Image 1 (spheres, rainbow, N blue to C red):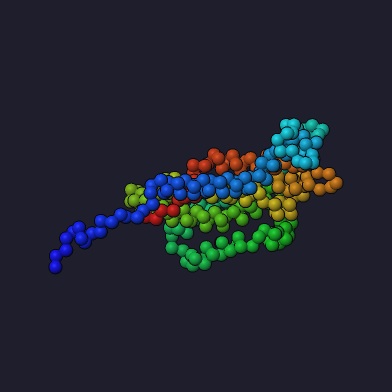
Image 2: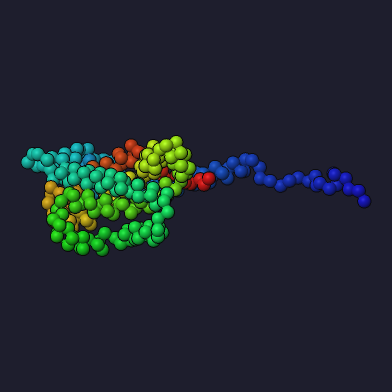
Length: 303
């Protein structure tokens, strides 16, 4: 028995949500998401905003009850006290900030210079027991610094590295090196080895091929790795407080912590010092922001 097309295909109305209802539902969901993200941002950024406000308040407004959020006198005296001592000259905090810049910067560069070639070697060459070696390198980061600070202190005392900037640079570089190797190995794996093979066919050596063709492609990964290494070195507290004892060597984290104690605390000075301490990392991350975003997202799309 023949069946016509009109009989086979139902001509009844197709039930569907009207376009207006779909747009309304999507708009309501977007508004809800924005509201939740705004609340989360306020909660997360409130301590930072309160720190910045405290750093520019006068002392009477800092200790005011109830707390003043907007109605207060703005001053820059706390930032002046961070850099200038009460009797004139450089303050101990300014010396600590310069020490942090030197120690964190040199240790980050040292870890990067040593870690990138090591990651390239582990990625490109067939090393015996490669997985075991990589696991051993990573295992050095399993323990927190407070666990190994005592034996490191004893070793440093024997070789005369206690209360020296060189001692902090070496220990920070040693702790950043495993992280650098593991993170950079992932970036090197994403660069095809055929680039180096083609370069060597053109007469370049292995190291020249790496320097001229592979290394430029690793700049985003190096930037991302350097930011994380700098953050660790800049914020590190345990080694800085156990391995240093003088103001000429102490870095910013223990110096700021030393401001809190006694019967009275100058919270305006503490907040101003914290703002100044946070700025260098933000500035460095801003300068390498393009490479940082590219480095974090590198490898997200598989070939």
